[in-house]
Length: 279
Image (cartoon, rainbow, N blue to C red; front, side, top):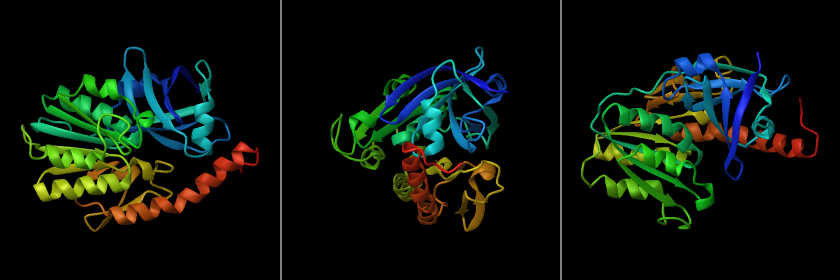
């Protein structure tokens, strides 16, 4: 059954927020979980993290970054139109409990899946230190949403165009020596960022989880495309994750696997622009 798009908003260049009608998913979803959808009848299936819900309205919020043909097709839909089908919620929920002080570190589009986790951590009684960043001010998303659920919100941009110049890991390194001390950390964003966060928290002895949702493809575990090595053992991000102990993830292998798909995604996106996309 098609799912109606209730609202659509552009958050940044090539980044779209959509509220989609999905009553059962909205009722059952927990922070950290995702869904799988197809924009159209002949579209491929793609996994997207559930960024927010309106349970009474039966709606879920998706934040879509255009990186390939299918995300481009989805982002092109307008409020009042329909997504062909949506399935979920999928994946293991984030382990939410009272840790004390939790650092929620998000880079780029990773701030979207970080939002519901940070909110749940706050609701569980934690002191939430949110550290978010992007390459430029124009690419920073969900600043006010994160501010509303954080005890501290620290912002950085790679080029220094907003707040402070630097990386989220620069801010985290400084905050690790501050008060109150960090008891637990969550990292979501580009692989090099998550790896750097894991290295910092490992040295400090702070338990950390990382969400590897960017590697997922079909979301069922059948294709094997989201295979990762965690603690020396093979895991599948969609069925075993999407979150894992960041100190045990082989981030170098993860980056190599992501690079395998990049050229194909770019080829399909360019072909779609001139009407030659493979279907």
